[in-house]
Image (cartoon, rainbow, N blue to C red):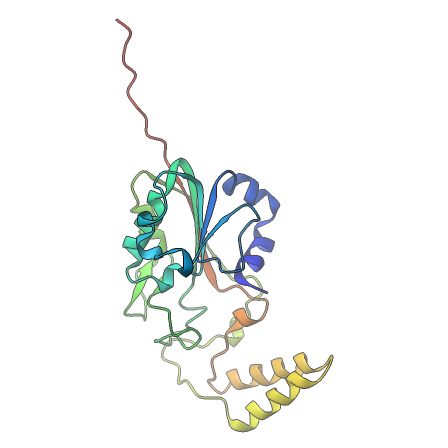
Length: 235
Protein backbone atom coordinates (compact mmCIF):
# COMPACT_ATOMS: atom_id res chain seq x y z
CA UNK A 1 0.00 0.00 0.00
CA UNK A 2 1.25 3.48 -0.84
CA UNK A 3 2.09 6.06 1.83
CA UNK A 4 -0.77 8.49 1.13
CA UNK A 5 -3.25 5.61 1.15
CA UNK A 6 -1.94 4.36 4.49
CA UNK A 7 -2.03 7.86 5.94
CA UNK A 8 -5.59 8.45 4.71
CA UNK A 9 -6.75 5.36 6.60
CA UNK A 10 -5.27 6.84 9.77
CA UNK A 11 -6.78 10.28 9.18
CA UNK A 12 -10.35 9.22 8.55
CA UNK A 13 -12.89 10.82 6.16
CA UNK A 14 -13.42 13.95 8.26
CA UNK A 15 -9.81 15.04 7.64
CA UNK A 16 -10.38 15.60 3.93
CA UNK A 17 -13.62 17.51 4.46
CA UNK A 18 -11.89 19.80 6.97
CA UNK A 19 -8.46 20.39 5.43
CA UNK A 20 -8.67 19.27 1.77
CA UNK A 21 -11.78 20.96 0.42
CA UNK A 22 -11.94 23.34 -2.51
CA UNK A 23 -9.04 23.61 -4.94
CA UNK A 24 -6.26 21.24 -3.84
CA UNK A 25 -2.79 20.64 -5.25
CA UNK A 26 -0.90 17.46 -4.29
CA UNK A 27 2.85 17.94 -4.74
CA UNK A 28 4.84 14.79 -5.49
CA UNK A 29 1.79 12.53 -5.41
CA UNK A 30 2.66 10.27 -8.31
CA UNK A 31 -0.24 7.84 -8.75
CA UNK A 32 -1.18 8.12 -5.06
CA UNK A 33 -3.37 11.23 -4.98
CA UNK A 34 -4.54 12.30 -1.54
CA UNK A 35 -8.10 12.82 -2.80
CA UNK A 36 -9.90 12.39 -6.10
CA UNK A 37 -10.32 16.13 -6.69
CA UNK A 38 -6.66 17.04 -6.09
CA UNK A 39 -4.52 18.43 -8.90
CA UNK A 40 -1.31 16.37 -9.19
CA UNK A 41 2.05 18.07 -9.46
CA UNK A 42 5.07 15.92 -10.34
CA UNK A 43 8.27 16.06 -12.38
CA UNK A 44 6.40 16.19 -15.66
CA UNK A 45 4.59 19.33 -14.48
CA UNK A 46 7.68 21.29 -13.42
CA UNK A 47 10.21 21.81 -10.64
CA UNK A 48 8.62 21.65 -7.18
CA UNK A 49 11.61 23.53 -5.76
CA UNK A 50 10.35 26.64 -7.58
CA UNK A 51 6.70 25.75 -8.04
CA UNK A 52 5.51 29.36 -8.14
CA UNK A 53 7.06 29.66 -11.60
CA UNK A 54 4.48 27.29 -13.05
CA UNK A 55 1.50 27.49 -10.67
CA UNK A 56 -0.37 30.63 -9.56
CA UNK A 57 0.23 32.10 -6.13
CA UNK A 58 -2.62 32.43 -3.61
CA UNK A 59 -4.84 30.23 -5.83
CA UNK A 60 -5.31 27.04 -3.77
CA UNK A 61 -7.44 26.22 -0.76
CA UNK A 62 -5.10 23.39 0.24
CA UNK A 63 -1.56 22.31 -0.54
CA UNK A 64 -0.73 18.68 0.26
CA UNK A 65 2.60 16.90 -0.02
CA UNK A 66 3.51 13.44 1.21
CA UNK A 67 7.13 12.24 1.16
CA UNK A 68 8.36 14.85 -1.28
CA UNK A 69 10.06 17.58 0.79
CA UNK A 70 13.02 15.28 1.58
CA UNK A 71 13.80 15.23 -2.17
CA UNK A 72 14.02 19.02 -2.45
CA UNK A 73 17.38 20.79 -2.73
CA UNK A 74 16.61 23.29 0.04
CA UNK A 75 13.53 22.37 2.11
CA UNK A 76 13.05 25.82 3.74
CA UNK A 77 12.97 27.53 0.33
CA UNK A 78 10.78 24.85 -1.25
CA UNK A 79 8.32 25.00 1.66
CA UNK A 80 8.06 28.77 1.27
CA UNK A 81 7.32 28.27 -2.43
CA UNK A 82 4.56 25.77 -1.63
CA UNK A 83 3.16 28.13 1.00
CA UNK A 84 2.90 30.91 -1.59
CA UNK A 85 0.31 28.88 -3.53
CA UNK A 86 -2.16 29.04 -0.63
CA UNK A 87 -5.00 31.48 -0.34
CA UNK A 88 -5.29 33.25 3.02
CA UNK A 89 -7.26 30.87 5.23
CA UNK A 90 -6.00 27.84 3.29
CA UNK A 91 -4.30 24.75 4.69
CA UNK A 92 -0.88 23.18 4.17
CA UNK A 93 -0.55 19.46 4.94
CA UNK A 94 3.00 18.14 4.72
CA UNK A 95 4.22 14.63 5.52
CA UNK A 96 7.92 13.67 5.72
CA UNK A 97 9.85 10.59 6.92
CA UNK A 98 10.89 10.72 10.58
CA UNK A 99 14.66 10.27 10.64
CA UNK A 100 14.90 7.83 13.57
CA UNK A 101 12.08 5.62 12.31
CA UNK A 102 12.95 5.67 8.61
CA UNK A 103 16.68 6.29 8.14
CA UNK A 104 17.46 4.76 11.57
CA UNK A 105 20.75 6.58 11.98
CA UNK A 106 22.05 5.59 8.54
CA UNK A 107 23.09 8.26 6.03
CA UNK A 108 22.95 8.42 3.06
CA UNK A 109 19.53 6.83 3.35
CA UNK A 110 19.67 3.07 3.01
CA UNK A 111 16.15 2.91 1.62
CA UNK A 112 16.01 5.89 -0.75
CA UNK A 113 19.22 7.29 -2.19
CA UNK A 114 17.45 10.36 -3.53
CA UNK A 115 16.69 11.66 -0.03
CA UNK A 116 18.66 14.86 0.41
CA UNK A 117 17.66 15.67 4.01
CA UNK A 118 16.20 14.07 7.11
CA UNK A 119 13.50 15.38 9.45
CA UNK A 120 12.78 15.43 13.16
CA UNK A 121 10.01 17.06 15.19
CA UNK A 122 10.50 19.53 18.06
CA UNK A 123 13.83 18.31 19.36
CA UNK A 124 17.30 19.84 19.32
CA UNK A 125 19.41 16.69 19.12
CA UNK A 126 20.01 14.70 15.95
CA UNK A 127 22.54 12.24 14.56
CA UNK A 128 22.05 13.60 11.02
CA UNK A 129 24.22 16.31 9.48
CA UNK A 130 21.38 17.24 7.09
CA UNK A 131 18.50 17.29 9.57
CA UNK A 132 15.67 19.84 9.74
CA UNK A 133 13.06 20.27 12.44
CA UNK A 134 9.90 20.23 10.32
CA UNK A 135 7.84 21.89 13.05
CA UNK A 136 10.31 24.74 13.19
CA UNK A 137 10.31 25.14 9.40
CA UNK A 138 6.53 25.35 9.21
CA UNK A 139 6.19 27.74 12.15
CA UNK A 140 8.64 30.10 10.41
CA UNK A 141 6.30 30.53 7.42
CA UNK A 142 4.66 33.97 7.23
CA UNK A 143 1.18 34.30 8.79
CA UNK A 144 1.32 30.62 9.82
CA UNK A 145 -0.83 28.94 12.45
CA UNK A 146 0.16 25.31 13.15
CA UNK A 147 -2.97 23.22 13.68
CA UNK A 148 -1.22 19.95 14.52
CA UNK A 149 2.22 18.32 14.36
CA UNK A 150 2.71 14.67 15.18
CA UNK A 151 4.87 11.63 14.63
CA UNK A 152 2.84 8.87 12.99
CA UNK A 153 4.12 5.36 13.66
CA UNK A 154 0.99 3.24 13.28
CA UNK A 155 1.98 -0.40 12.68
CA UNK A 156 5.65 0.30 13.40
CA UNK A 157 7.46 -2.31 15.52
CA UNK A 158 10.07 -0.38 17.50
CA UNK A 159 11.79 -3.64 18.43
CA UNK A 160 12.86 -3.93 14.78
CA UNK A 161 14.42 -0.47 14.60
CA UNK A 162 18.16 0.06 14.50
CA UNK A 163 19.56 2.86 16.64
CA UNK A 164 22.12 5.56 15.75
CA UNK A 165 25.63 4.20 16.26
CA UNK A 166 24.56 0.57 15.97
CA UNK A 167 26.77 -1.57 13.73
CA UNK A 168 25.02 -2.06 10.39
CA UNK A 169 25.36 -5.31 8.50
CA UNK A 170 24.36 -6.66 5.11
CA UNK A 171 21.92 -9.52 4.86
CA UNK A 172 23.81 -12.83 4.45
CA UNK A 173 23.40 -14.57 1.10
CA UNK A 174 21.79 -17.56 2.77
CA UNK A 175 19.01 -15.39 4.24
CA UNK A 176 18.58 -13.58 0.91
CA UNK A 177 18.08 -16.94 -0.78
CA UNK A 178 15.53 -18.09 1.82
CA UNK A 179 13.66 -14.80 1.51
CA UNK A 180 13.60 -15.13 -2.28
CA UNK A 181 12.19 -18.65 -1.97
CA UNK A 182 9.62 -17.46 0.54
CA UNK A 183 8.35 -14.80 -1.86
CA UNK A 184 7.49 -17.51 -4.40
CA UNK A 185 5.43 -19.61 -2.00
CA UNK A 186 1.67 -19.08 -1.87
CA UNK A 187 -0.03 -18.28 1.44
CA UNK A 188 2.91 -18.86 3.79
CA UNK A 189 5.50 -17.04 1.67
CA UNK A 190 4.90 -13.61 3.20
CA UNK A 191 5.19 -15.03 6.73
CA UNK A 192 8.49 -16.70 5.83
CA UNK A 193 9.85 -13.50 4.28
CA UNK A 194 8.91 -11.43 7.32
CA UNK A 195 10.37 -13.96 9.71
CA UNK A 196 13.69 -13.90 7.84
CA UNK A 197 13.76 -10.08 7.78
CA UNK A 198 12.96 -9.89 11.50
CA UNK A 199 15.75 -12.35 12.22
CA UNK A 200 18.19 -10.32 10.10
CA UNK A 201 17.43 -7.15 12.10
CA UNK A 202 18.77 -8.82 15.22
CA UNK A 203 22.09 -9.09 13.37
CA UNK A 204 22.18 -5.41 12.39
CA UNK A 205 20.44 -5.56 9.02
CA UNK A 206 18.14 -2.49 8.68
CA UNK A 207 14.51 -3.04 7.77
CA UNK A 208 12.26 -0.57 5.93
CA UNK A 209 8.98 -1.17 7.74
CA UNK A 210 7.13 1.22 5.42
CA UNK A 211 7.39 -1.56 2.85
CA UNK A 212 4.88 -3.31 5.09
CA UNK A 213 1.83 -1.65 6.68
CA UNK A 214 3.79 0.69 8.96
CA UNK A 215 4.07 4.45 8.95
CA UNK A 216 7.37 6.11 9.90
CA UNK A 217 6.64 9.78 9.37
CA UNK A 218 5.78 13.24 10.65
CA UNK A 219 2.63 15.08 9.66
CA UNK A 220 2.17 18.83 10.07
CA UNK A 221 -1.04 20.69 9.32
CA UNK A 222 -0.91 24.49 9.16
CA UNK A 223 -3.27 27.31 8.23
CA UNK A 224 -2.38 30.55 6.48
CA UNK A 225 -3.99 33.29 8.54
CA UNK A 226 -6.26 35.67 6.64
CA UNK A 227 -4.83 39.14 6.28
CA UNK A 228 -6.84 41.53 8.44
CA UNK A 229 -7.31 44.84 6.77
CA UNK A 230 -7.99 47.94 8.84
CA UNK A 231 -11.53 49.24 8.70
CA UNK A 232 -11.71 52.73 7.27
CA UNK A 233 -14.17 54.80 9.30
CA UNK A 234 -17.06 56.29 7.38
CA UNK A 235 -16.80 60.10 7.48
